[in-house]
Image (cartoon, rainbow, N blue to C red):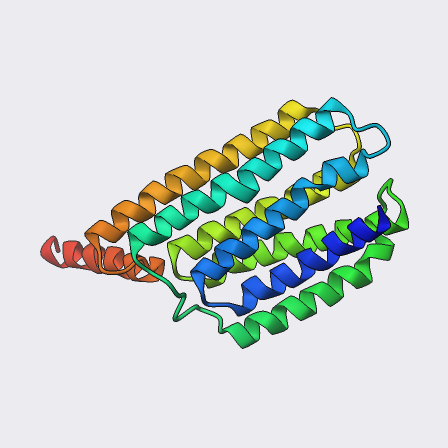
Length: 225
């Protein structure tokens, strides 16, 4: 288990840094898919002594949704929106990578202070789960493309999933399935929104849509003094 555990931990770290430093949306979707497949193996690895039905169902569901369904929906939205790169993020990619390195160092320094009912090895996974949550929040806040923000939401959920799988060996599988279903619905709806936005506008930069809303509000106030 230690080899697989170390591999998944390293893969999560590298995938998070890759998401922070890449502007290619197709590459980012593939990275999130690989991240989801790695996380889908966690229930089996942590429950390898029993290989319970709960662990198998949870792992299969996570692998199918995170590794296949979500990437397929995102690639479909990517083709519909006809966009390939995140060209002008609010925070540049160099600064994003610096944030990632600093955030990783902080969570690694704090892992020894976490009062959690887990071993020292599993505290490393908890720290990486917090790091993944921070990366997800960062992508949501600092990226302009709606599709990249969807990816940030998925990364955020991946961190929550890793945290929940690590600290609790006997989670109710209905709760896990409910979380996965919520994410599935969210990605599906966001994919439809991106598709319709791309048909109506020449871009899907969310900050431009916000400026359009402010312009309309200002025009309304001028017409109605």
